[in-house]
Length: 241
Image (cartoon, rainbow, N blue to C red):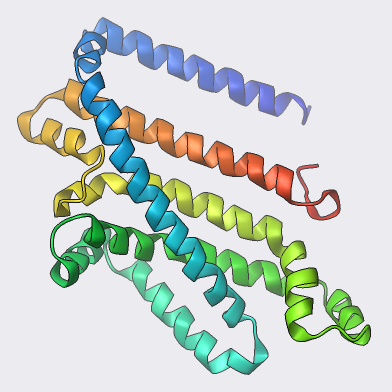
């Protein structure tokens, strides 16, 4: 029964894609959307650059913060960092982008700053949760073998927490790709140009020409990180194997 669930999910996705394509064709939207293919190809490049840069920065910042949250010596600092990161979830996305615009002005730097701030939380939380879930007896055994704290972190804790950390990265990058269209509002570019222009002009074909590729990119990124999660995490600590 469990083995049939993935096959059923794939069948459901294919059926949904077919139904969506049939609906768009019946409405005459597919030919109109195809007329924007040149714009889509051009804007996808900028979209992915924004997502890649902000995602990489979020990973580079989020994992060290997550590690600090679990270190005994940095408990006070870790609590402060946690509050700062959690604050980002209480501020609306557009407000964060507007704040970035006031600091960096219009353009890609503001978009990257805002997207990085919005992408941090899942990475930080999953890194901290994964490290806290590492069995204490493994850490104590490594300490008893004479391993230094840095060695314990790199050789014991992080390998055992890698699956949970990658799950956070997977969620964060999918959110990042789906949020990039908002960067258009502060001059960042991306597929938001088609989406918001389509809304302003009441052009459903233009809107969908930006929205559908955005959704497909988010699904693709989620799938690719899922493959990395399966391949990189060892069998003993990988529930997918």
